[in-house]
Amino acid sequence: MKESITSTEFHFILRQARNVMNGHMHANDEDVLAAVGQMAIERAEQSAADLPDELAQVIRMIGNIREREDFDRFRERIQPFVRPMAEVTDMELKKMFPKVKNLRMPKFAEAVRKELTYLGWNDPGTNRKYIVFEKGGGFTGFYGQFRPSGKKGVCSICNGIDETGLFLTETRHAGGETYTKRGNYICTDSMACNRRLDDRTRFDEFIRSVKNS
Ligand SMILES: [Zn+2]
Image (cartoon, rainbow, N blue to C red; front, top):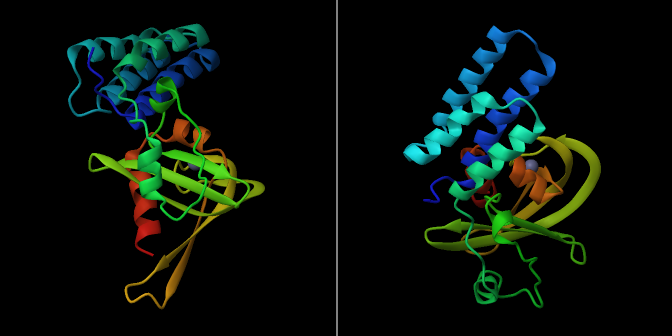
């Protein structure tokens, strides 16, 4: 089985499956439910540019989802097709953050890395949030000051509503004399953020907004 879809595509397909499950929980009209199922399949099929036949077959099972158990089984069938984010070695981490002493990064199991577009973790000792993602066959990473607000808000990365905090980055301009500060409200819980992230362009836009400041 080829690992052919990304984490965001995985979450997008699961969102369609969830729509079908919720439809069956809240509606009875067979025609409406059939239409909801058909639309979910079509949208899921459009999630990835080049769907292998094996995966396309599994996606068509979305139409048979009725309850939570069906959804869970569907999720298990799709999961093997997801390409996990690569593992970051200690050496790569050191290379990304050469000035940070004793940096600890949580370990992410393969099943978890299938759900991730980025690795994000909070370092309460320094009030920082670290963000690492794959780029050009390697990794790139940065950190910003981060303080959870304790309030719910819209996240700049996943567009979901959850507890957020202000992620503050500082970029030194060429020449080195001036700085620009940039703030984005993002999810405190980066794992939950990744699980909601079903559109890669949103993450890329966030990166651009931090880097071009
Ligand atoms: Zn988020």
